[in-house]
Image (cartoon, rainbow, N blue to C red; front, side, top):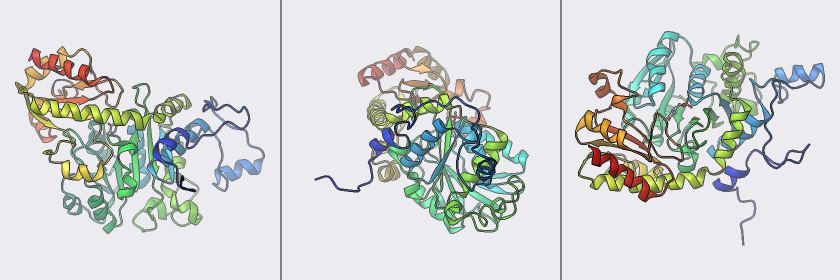
Length: 432
Ligand SMILES: *Cc1c(COP(=O)(O)O)cnc(C)c1O
């Protein structure tokens, strides 16, 4: 007999969470609310909404019901308390940082980051007076050495760039929490389908919806999920403990009800940077991601299955100099990956093509099934040779420092038939 009161499983939540038939029209599908603004029932109602005494719709930059369905669904999938959707994954990251840190503060971040995030932390945050200290994602103790009284958060990616090192989230969370700091995890490469980062100590989870959650390369979007577990009452979090001039002097960690204090991060994110800097997700794109997320568990299983087969194939190929995939038993990340990624190792494979830069270019240009482009997480297989494209402006020395080699080819393995995927890789090798 089925267990009573058992929490719904991941696949059920992917399809059902956050949206039920529309009470007015009985529409089963999620309606797209194409509206900028919402009528106040009375002056008091309007005032209560702004004062956070009551939750409701005000203006679609702050929140939209279609986005709300998506936010509730991702919250359920991550096992968090509240989520805020944004115009891109990048906007989710930037708004997360400035929700917590301000001029004079520091962050401690793993250095093996998505390129755009690296530039944000390396070149843009310092201009705003926020200093990034770079740690080694493979060494949890390297984070501790960089933490000081100015540190406001610790940042990692669940599976990093460019060589797919899997972070020991439990160990890094333990370091962050020892110093009463939140751990922010960009979980784009794992998605909640493969790894529930909150269960391993993440306080804030970021997903670029653009990638596997959307899954079809059809829209750009991001989301930040608040675990509801971090206590912001430490006075060093001045943005939460001193009167916030961005929100009529509210002290987020002091003045809110106990219930709302738990999601103080999500509330400040929505009502300060989202409201006043404006990087909101359009309801059309929220709807696109709602379609995508429904099949996330099915797709990610197929991505992982195909990627593992490609990794094994490359491992044996005489023209592949090296291969990195967290699911290969001799991969440096395998011991952690085996512990964390129990449902699959994800859709990304990187390898070195023998013959360096010219061979890399030949390989990429000969592919037919793989699309040569700078995205990941599509149902279609994608390939990139960073040294000749996305990272070609960097000097060879800078490339080396970021762990990027001239021979590195990055594959985002799609859900096509594995024989066709491997035949295409063979075609690429034949050209080198
Ligand atoms: C793509 C990506 C981002 C940025 O997301 P956008 O939606 O493109 O802004 C951030 N982190 C990771 C790991 C990504 O793959």
